[in-house]
Length: 278
Length: 294
Image (cartoon, rainbow over all chains, first blue to last red; front, side):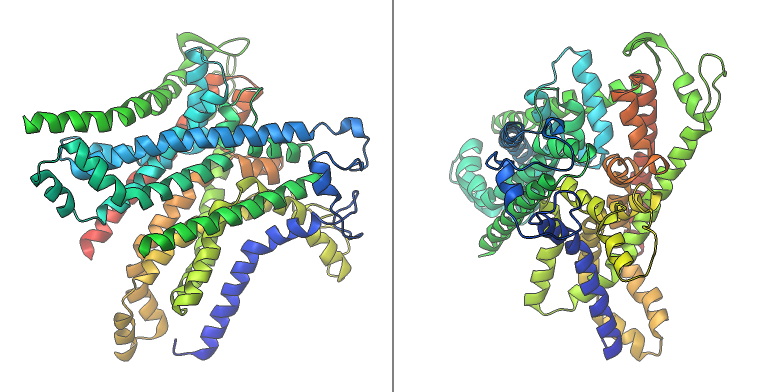
């Protein structure tokens, strides 16, 4: 920049931009330690009550209402967390296998429908999730499938396969095919070349894709909203329900824990990526 | 022989995706299309007879007897389109200068800020929206601060207005605009900018003739990635918008979960799909054109 004032203005604007992104998160974290149960905007004093309350350890009353009006229990929240984790594990496994297989097929084989598949795999990512959600809902009801954890897993896999595909495909594009050609020339079959030569080189890309799939599956709200039955609630749906019923201090505590977890996961992702470039 | 074995391997690799997406992606979309032309059942569900009034209710050829044309649907569609467009414009204005700033930082700081912009991708959407609920509500942070410093005497009504919805969408979509934009700003040819300035073009001319054309692919990419999830969004208006912030996504949700009029909900979804496919096709064509000129 030739103009120092211009650069200073740009710096101020940019720092303001990052403040805009992060300040709201710090608001939640701050209020999660405020003991005022009626108006959380007015600071009373520091407390861990909302956290201990989350795990059923505190018997402090929440809000102005009576205890009976407070429908969310610790058990429900932990069950929702368990459902989210189970769904995310299965979704990650299935979408990683399918997405990786597709990426290899499109990168290493020449066939007529290749262009079609490349375009087709973009569609689930671009389709608004509400359309996909209600499409799956009508489909499951029409074929008589009960809404359950299985339907949530299927719903997540439909779009996460594409995410894994894109990440693995980017990794393959950066590989030297000479290694695989050498393997084939030396008499290895396609399967052996795939397993022993291609897959090890792809491992960081596959890990990255799997991590992304896991994170998005844990966070998905809209598709889960339509394809989950009454029995299986995921964590985002649970929080969505809580928020719809009104703001309570416990939500701040859950939200803070989720923010913490996402920072850890993002750092893990960064670490994986930096290892890849070594 | 080798060729045959190759096609077996290819078949094994492609079969899962073909089956899975065929059954659980293409088929549901086709079912939406079919349902949008069926008669709504009296108690939810459908009757398998052809019916075009689902679209008539939206676009105005309903007979006013069996089905009633309600201009409110077109209004909500228009509102969704304009909210999404506004979100694109605002995220672009916010991200463009910042992308420049980040690209000019030293390696170390650049990595720090790029990490900070990708972090929201990993954090929960519902938690980030909830933060704005805390800030905007009548007894929320913003009103408390403004009242205390005496800027206002009555709490502002921001929550449950269209402004809150657009603000929420901008907040959620900002990282999606930033990354494609940054990718194109980062590869800008600095020598060309210097040359343009040296040859006597002023800053505005240089921006319009050198910088803008080079970053256009990033702008289009970001605009598409932000517009598409915004137009069918139902979570942001659900949490932050009131009746005046209702968008077409909320309308679809109502048809499926409370009104139980699935054919009408399907017709509304078809409109969302049509909008999305149009945007995608126009942007692909546009991208080809830009690529052709370069």
